[in-house]
Image 1 (cartoon, rainbow, N blue to C red):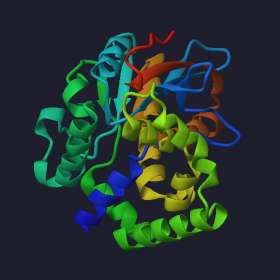
Image 2 (spheres, rainbow, N blue to C red):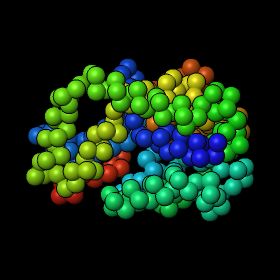
Image 3 (cartoon, rainbow, N blue to C red):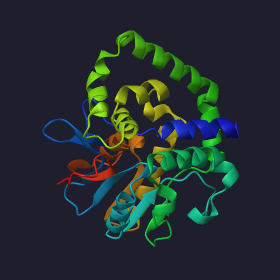
Image 4 (tube, rainbow, N blue to C red):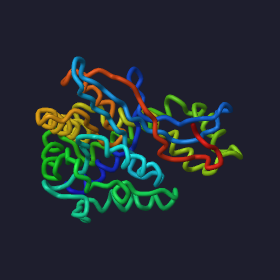
Length: 284
């Protein structure tokens, strides 16, 4: 079961996080000629009408430019509390991460960061900041939640298999990717593989077909509800300006919970460059 949790968590970190009728949480910024400039992640803000309460969904990607994490660290200083995701035992801190518990995820991410010449979130974010608050399940709690829902690596494997088959059936010639291939092969693109991944990371269909309804899953829904529970505790304690710093794949379901459970309303979105895709261009 532990290995199944590792793989499920790794799959959940695929940052596929735009949805058809709601807020966009990931996008690729392009120049007027539609050449890719940067993978951008959203900081979406929500307010409680009639109060001075504001909650920001700060979308995270677990490997990114060092400058991206530096900007987030600076922004986090302005919050009363930053609620963060980390599958870890209670009272654990970043420096106490269990290598056995997170080895599969960490080794894969480290390999990817080296391949793409990026930085690792857990090495760059200041998790020791005084306003950082753990808002995630423990490994034991996640395991129990998966068992309760009948979730396992076997289930996710077959969902992924059928999702891949359905994608081929929709587009057997790959015509929907012609624009992507053009961007990848452009002489103005610094890194074709990174560009390909950036576009893939904004594709909604893959995530919904793999995990089903986010609200019902352990990897997304149960963890998001823990974040909402901790948010309510911080609001009850008097905090007014709070960030929820979670992987971008969690954000559509988290937004639903803010709107439906807490009665918040969407305010606006700021964008942060997570991956620069063309270092020769300044992005405004």
